[in-house]
Length: 323
Image (cartoon, rainbow, N blue to C red; front, side, top):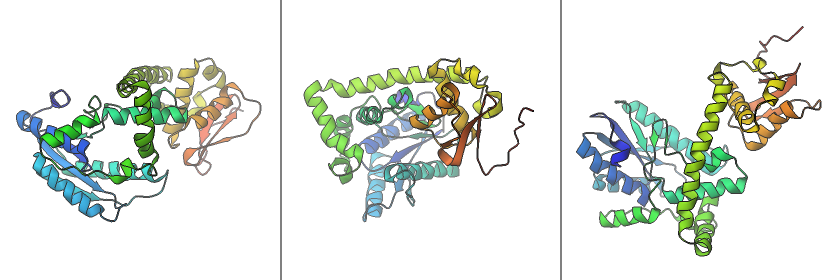
């Protein structure tokens, strides 16, 4: 925690996302300790998703334990979870939206948001990405830092956060859906797959998966940098009619596919899957007269006059076509 917060200016606000579980409670306690030593302002935000009948009680219990851990500025945010993308994704989106809104409302000097993701979470994320057939970016797992979100426990095992709570006499909440085989997919992974892997491959499998994620993170970052460089800067400033398909096809696959993903998402398309990127790439490298392909968010991509065009059917067409 000292490494994560060591270079912050005096008075910087540091917020902890707390579920009430052992990971986030141990994180809150560590933040409270270091913040006192370094003159930082520590606060906690608890999100009540309303997905369980006693969710409000669980949230208040988490607030009580956070105060016992040493953080006395605590907010409980009630959210409504939609259904877009599935329950887990919708809950995550609602949670981060509430966290960011509260941090913005409180203001302060370059505030940070810390989450309690552990090495075990990282290993589970890598396995899920492998099962989906994902690329290097997804296989690189949970980033240690993205924007103002910091995850200092990615090198800490879940068992160590449990031990920390016991040593500090904190009473964490154990979400029953995290440990049931018929719960969310990650719960089944946690209760069935990971124990089997540890039994067969040994206890080092968790740290090994996390280490692979760290190595792939560096590779993915470099490939993304090269893709942005090949685009001449930010993808958001480039019109799609500047991209001739023959020029794109001449690029290495790893750079071209990243460019296409960046271009589509910066044009307005929702996050692209590997299937969408492959279909988009086929317009560039394997075009046989096929028509437009659909992209997330209602966008479409098509090939016209040897160039790639990405647009929304309902948006006015302002691109000039060759005579």
